[in-house]
Length: 108
Ligand code: 2BA
Image (spheres, rainbow, N blue to C red):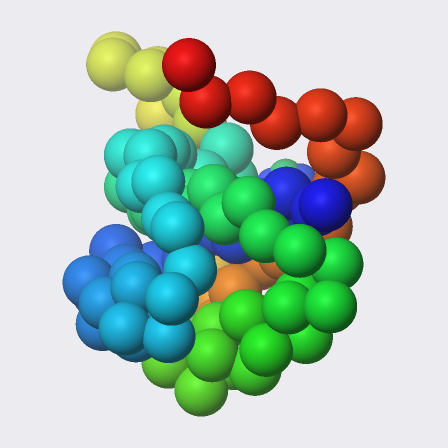
């Protein structure tokens, strides 16, 4: 068994999690925040059989779009502290995916 951790843009999270559920996957959504842009994203937890991992990844590829986002220059500096560098555009999404081995899964 595997646990897929997929970090996706908030805008894609509803459509991708609906598609996964329609296809028979079990999904948990966590509200998360990217450490670099400090904006909200969504982390999906998908526990599934080894042989279903590729199918889940295909769905993530289909529904998660790559987009450009501007990093605010003071995003990492906190209130009252200013960074005078210019805003920086970074490419983000479609999905950042980690596939982990699961020793055991229990439902009680
Ligand atoms: P953020 O950390 O907010 O990063 C947003 C985008 O900013 C990244 O897009 C990347 O293009 C850029 N970026 C991030 N860290 C950077 C750095 N140290 N230097 C230069 N550019 C940087 P993605 O790579 O598509 O990542 C989207 C989100 O996925 C990230 O949001 C983070 O929440 C997560 N993520 C990506 N890689 C990760 C990793 N290795 N471990 C944990 N989380 C990760």
